[in-house]
Image (cartoon, rainbow, N blue to C red; front, side, top):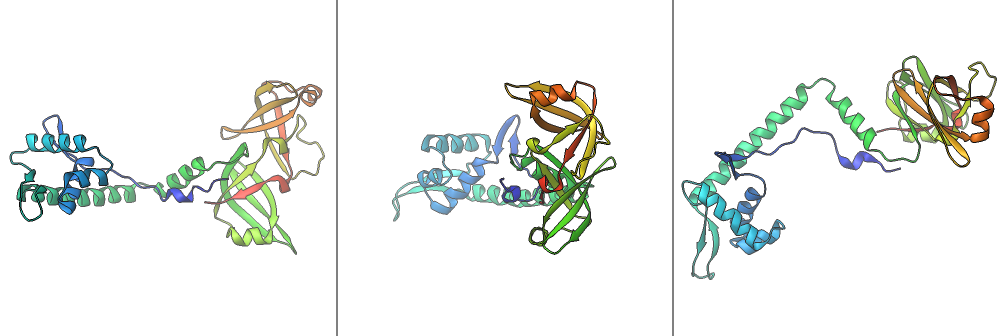
Length: 270
């Protein structure tokens, strides 16, 4: 399972562009190019620093100079250092103005993000979507109960619509994941761990019972993939043998209960 934490927090991002008419004047790679020309005094070194070809760099410089009322970049000929490329005073002034305005633009975007209700929840949801795992079933919810025993503990996760998933896990895992009531977590369940029964009252030791409607049946050579539509428009997948599907009389539109042992539920947190 890949941890999406390396993606960093969600933010609203953007970069400022100055345009002349319908043409882009200053922004993006062009700003980076100007910054590197100012730092290195060489267009070849500047182009290399931002992974731009020498020709593309000069094309960008020519485009900026053509769109500007005064040149931003000039070739310096001769001198103690043998010439090179440098910004004009006007070019430095325009670069400074753009940098200041970009800072104000970023500050404005940060204020916009701060004013969006539930922005942090959107961040957590996108992190969950980005997480890669072999478990077919992923249910996000809020922890309502955590109990420790001598070695193992148990946890209850409210996934909405009156549905709760229970998981058993070691006390060490509870501590390492900082699991506590009120915290958001995700239940991961492999499709092969899901048992199915058309009878919701069937007696079995599996602690988790999620009842829904069969909305997908895909038989294979040996096994059959079954999809249950749960309350809240969530889907749970199960894999059973074709023989079991036939014996249970599974059919589209039929009510069915998924049975999952608490020890088969993996808990993940952001």
